[in-house]
Length: 354
Ligand SMILES: Nc1ncnc2c1ncn2[C@@H]1O[C@H](COP(=O)(O)OP(=O)(O)OP(=O)(O)O)[C@@H](O)[C@H]1O
Ligand SMILES: [Mg+2]
Image (cartoon, rainbow, N blue to C red; front, side, top):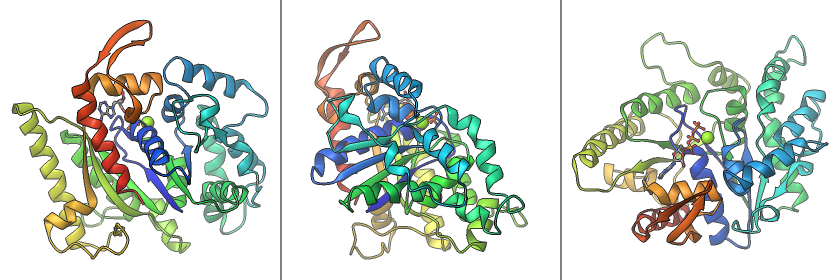
């Protein structure tokens, strides 16, 4: 079983969109496995897409949020706030089979539904990490909450082969920390703009303690993870998202930015001990820029209207058809050319996810 966190501390780079597409496509490609999405973002965007999109998905979300007990990530976090240091073994109570709400998503996709209530709970989660309020290793135990949640679910599935995707919010919140502790692999989406380069560096410094300048303070997360001898996820892939293929000046500007980010990542690989996850398993360690790029970088094109429709209607791009669609009462057209741009991309990306 692999657990992937999808994170970049820059907003709007496609974390939730890719979570939705990856989970759905992975489930199509692996019908014998279960796919679990843990939505750790209070905006619950990936949940909304999985549950049917902007209209129906949002309605389903409201219904789920309105029920007691609250069968969402916040329901589980409430359990853990009540029992911070003793595992509640209650994780499996909080799974939703997506297909029951949205039959466009394969029946082997399961979701721990995102919830805006996470924001209200976060100060209590943070204070539970304080050893003055709990045991000496309070920080460690609380940071294992999401790992515990996934273990509970896995146990209830009698160890069926499972792949887990955790959608994170952009900020380095306590929930992002919990996700990074639970994950063994990290997918880092980025977009082709100047601030993405800074964000890529920020991920390295926040998660792996890379100092940008001598004397820079390291993150508490990095320091505590080390002092408790806990593991960090390995970098699995950088995903350049919403890249445009058109042969024009904006495409070449995009390429310049992507190349700069690429150089940044490559020099990190060459010069430091940041953990990268070799894949597919058994592949030798890359020994030049080309083989490095093949293993650790991927590009997903901008699919324009097709992606808007896919997200808004909760139809994974792999099964979206061309033609007229109704989104929020308006008719829009999905062109086959837009699908041709992104569908093979997403399928290839998923083939690289083990
Ligand atoms: N490859 C793509 N082609 C076209 N549109 C895309 C693509 N990827 C993402 N988008 C769109 O970009 C917008 C931002 O994506 P998304 O919400 O997934 O980003 P995010 O990183 O999760 O944002 P946040 O940081 O707020 O959680 C969405 O409207 C989404 O539909
Ligand atoms: Mg998001």
